[in-house]
Image (tube, rainbow, N blue to C red; front, top):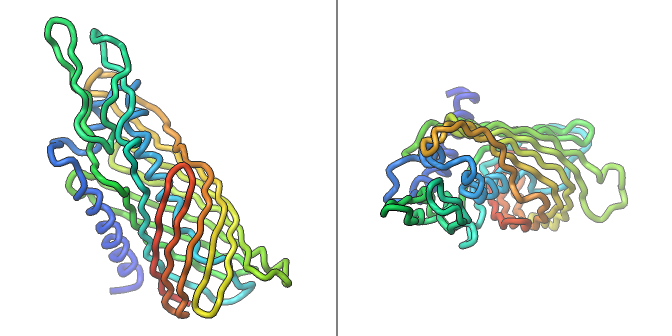
Length: 301
């Protein structure tokens, strides 16, 4: 097996593990997959239904880009990393206010989001009833996993790449993920600095099935301090992510084309790593609109 095939195989295995966690937390009574569930939501309610999903997914995508701010000026660097992250899902992420369709009374009703339980049933004229869409994913932590490759160093700069293709798994649709970025050493301009400093930007695209596409972007600064094999690191980051939905609503037979932005924009990160030269382990916590926990294991020089 050549290097390219090994990388593709590892990408599949890592992503499969992450999506199995999602698939295992699917609502047990749901007969439709995530895509079909979203297709049944009207244009006026879809934003509330998927907003917590956008927040969680966007925050996870923008995690794990760095484990240290130390970047050499010149020299060979290559490191392959397996990254697992999870966004904490609270009770507030499981319900939203939705509007029943005509001819039902147009008063907001609290019902399930994509992370919720069963959709609320409302009564209408003439003994009619209407049930909102059920939740599809039951979980306290929304997980993701990916492979990341960093290559450098050239004038204190490293390139960072991510790529994961995943086939359809159970209720979760086919997924393709690609991202790249760059990090640049600030410490090289401050030789007397007691800590390592760096800055970076990162962009990603995630295509989920036939109706969902996520674009994510982040930039910020990082700081770290190494003491023997232990590295303490942190950073401040601005980020954005947008879910583009394009589908025909099966409940109203109307076309839905909309962009839904994540509510997570600024995060502070603190973490710790263990560096054994070729092997590196790390874990960190990020605080923003949502809380994200990220861990990684990497191999390289």
